[in-house]
Each structure stands twice: as structure tokens, then as C-alpha cells.
Image 1 (tube, rainbow, N blue to C red):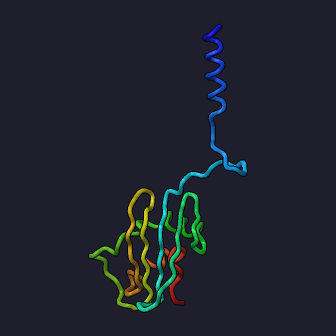
Image 2 (cartoon, rainbow, N blue to C red):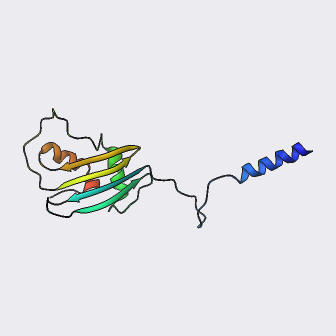
Image 3 (tube, helix red, strand yellow):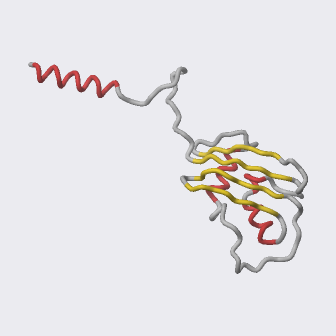
Length: 136
């Protein structure tokens, strides 16, 4: 009989284990898998704008965190520099610069962006939802 009580107790304890709930009764959310700080400057002498972005779930004070997270997911190596052997057009896209620092899917990120030639403009435009569209 004691083993039956022990089994019943074990089942009762196991049944009470589950998702943690918040004070409002909802399920506690997991920590975001990515946390980034994004700074965009209109020119070298401007103070710029700085946002935080978290993904999975999307959040932070970025103007559109869901779109920014989608753009990062879609991009091929969004934080990698332009390849040294890439042929780039000589065109100037403006004085804007940006930096992204933090962690993305377990990887440390420290990337910078500018609009100084065709390759850098294309790189910026691929992350327009993250950095902003640049000049029009």
C-alpha cells in the first residue's frame, strides 16, 4: 500500500509541474535569442539614433522590431563585411553610418555599415528594415 501512495504522490507532483505562469496568468516568456544595439548616424558629426532590438520574440525600442528581425533572418550573413575581392561601383550613397553590436543567435556581433560605394549601399539596403532606408 505504501508503494501505491508513493506512486500516487509522484504522479500528483509530476502533474503539477508545467509552464511557469506570470502574475497575469500567462505563460512566462523565454529570454530573447538575440539582443542587438543599433546606432545610425546621418553624418559623421551627428549624434545619431540608437535602438535596441531583440528577436525570438521581437522587441526592444526599435521602430519596427518584427520587420527588423525578419530582415536579419532573411539576409545572407547580415553582419559580414563586403568581400575584399568584390567589384564595387564607385558611387556615393551618402554620409550615413551605422553600427550593430550585441549577440545574434549565440554569435557575437560587431558590424559597421556605410554608404560609400555600390557594395556598401547594397549591404545597407539589404538591412533597410534594421538600419532605415537611407536617403531617398
